[in-house]
Image (tube, rainbow, N blue to C red; front, side, top):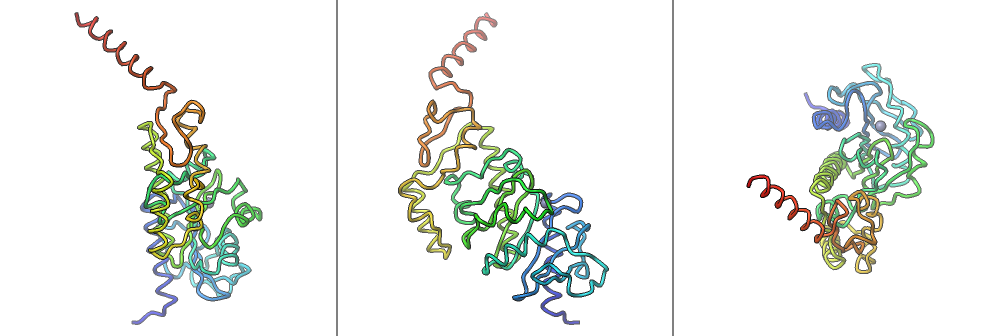
Length: 286
Ligand SMILES: [Zn+2]
């Protein structure tokens, strides 16, 4: 039996849903994803179904106003969050797939009110670029799209919504899903590096070289025009401040600078502390 291209897309939505659930990006029936199939038609996940157990017949079809236009074979209703997806499709014609998810490490940044820092990891720069941080709006409410629509451009592929979750965009579902994986992995790496207490920020000339490479890959990035002047990493201060250092006392000179030390001690203080502890151990063992 041969299946229609639409059925194949529905099947792919189920497979991606399974990955999302297995990776722990969505618990219970959280999250939703969609694919734009024409100017006025979008496939989307139903409300109330785990992303790990979707079947092709569960997938709903809506128009650009969010009205369900075909009777769903499984009697499913479209996700209430599809209005967020539709607002993005209307603003960004090149976006053909949207995944809303709750990836735990990235959501930690949402909960902490920390924009994802940039200018730190090459892959994150090439595949995510500058992410958008949106202020809190009630999930499912009419204000949710308004919290980020003014901030997104065709270069945006990742949105973090304060106290809520992420939205990943792509030209197809696979691309949007890869970006979701890269987002959560990058957020996890940042949290681990924070536990080590030190993060080296790429220097301006290193960022320029990286963004030139990104452009050569076919991903233009407007930051290339100002990276040499340090425009990358302007939003990093909230993350860097979480290391317990202030920009004045730290050897942090903004983008391109080096951030180190978590405890407020400089290296001399640290050396003294180590010496004191060593002396105490030696004294105790004598
Ligand atoms: Zn959500």
